[in-house]
Structure formats: structure tokens, C-alpha cells
Amino acid sequence: MGELSNLQLRGIRGGVWATGNAIASAGLAFLNFVVLSRILGPESFGLMAMVDASLALGQTLLATSLAESPDQRSGDADLRPGAERPRASEAGLLRRLPPDG
Image (cartoon, rainbow, N blue to C red):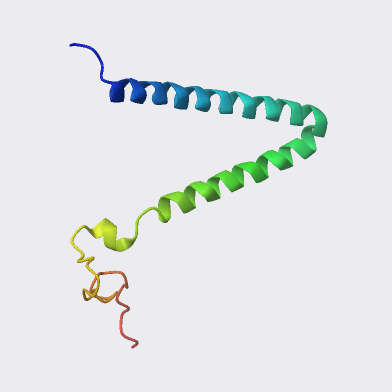
């Protein structure tokens, strides 16, 4: 192992700054909740915490469900412009209903 290149040093510095930012953000968020719990009282703080948790869950669900389109997940779809897309029934996106009877 020799010296680190300039690019490697910049990458390490960026990682250190990103880690420091994440730690500082978590610490400030904790302090924010401590101060708010003192100001609001138990009942109001509980309501605020439930709303905050619900919003965080919603953001997580949206981020994971919208991260990739179904074409990207399948891996075998032809994504070129003008390429014919499979119908929803052919792609297995619609379930077949039993006939009425």
C-alpha cells in the first residue's frame, strides 16, 4: 500500500463530513424533541410525536414504492423509445377473475 491519491483523500474527507453531518443532525433532532416535550407537555407532545411518526412512515412507503417502476424491476423489459410494452394482463399485473356463474 502506497500513498492515497487525491481522489481517495477527497472521498475519505467527504465520507467523514457526511458522517459528521448525520451525527449532528440526529443530535439536534433529539434536542429538538427534548425541548418540545418540555414546552408542549405530555398530551400535546404525544400527539405531535404520533403525527411525526405517521409522516415518517408515509415518506418511507412512498420512497420505497416509487423508487423503481415495474419495467425497471422486471429486468427483461425493452425500455428503448418506441418499443412495444407488454399489456398489463400479459405482464401478470392483472389477476384473472373467475367467470360469473
